[in-house]
Image (cartoon, rainbow, N blue to C red; front, side, top):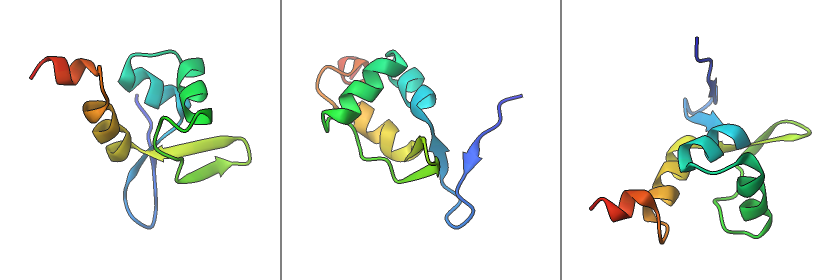
Length: 75
């Protein structure tokens, strides 16, 4: 089973730190550091007081476009 978080208003899939990091092939701590440095898309909401969430489509687009991304090297 692979449960997902979906925004009830928009139907968008939302990712926590671990899903964002896994998609990008980095450690969750690296994603957190990048976010603190303003190098990732901003979280769009918080699932609870401690869990930021990102729009999965936005993270995918960011990862594909970022310099040095493995997806850019395959083009």
